[in-house]
Length: 298
Image (cartoon, rainbow, N blue to C red):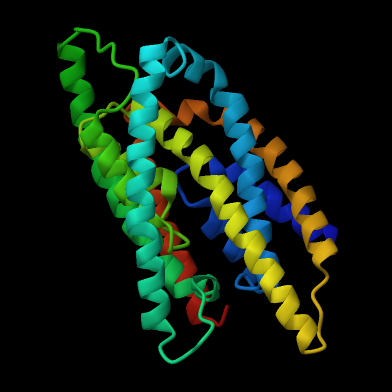
């Protein structure tokens, strides 16, 4: 793949990552417009590595905040760790069986079906964007009402983490996000936390921390998938340039890191109280655009 296409996709991923609008959906649509196959092993590896680049941007951006909250004391870290393990466990228990169920249902009779083969389906992305948009819109409109109530009650809330119940809901919904491109992980999990009673800043902080935990096993999964695809392609006499795929993905991760860090600094004001619902409206509108692209043959 041409380097300029990698850089373009990396910048798209980086700038969209902070917003709850499904950066992966934006990248998949970009790949389709660039006449690339989002379901190809090297392309899914690129997408995961772009997420890795923005993951490091998230770590750099949120590190001081996490120090003041999750790492402020031994007790604070223990509370966070228990909730993170609980949420991540629920993600695995729900997400991976769901992936296997979809693979068996969508690819019945095929011996080597993989969920990644559905990533090029813009119609599915449109539906996922619509679902995420509705969830974000509901949480955002509820937050606008809650802001008024908070203004009337000036008692400070000193909790630094979400509750066990809120963590459970966030982890469960994160599991539902795993098989679907377009169902924004950050948008869905933060909105779920808000609907479960968590303040948006705590839900946001916890959601991005879970993303850092989730990314390494996802990267490993896609790396193993690429290795298997390489061996299978070599056996058919049409080898995949594994070295080229890895190098271009690493380059993309670097650009995604830079773009993600810039976006996090520039767009942080957009996450102020009362504006969350705007992202839901955007996702719903984007779903319409993506579905239109599907109807005209992309």
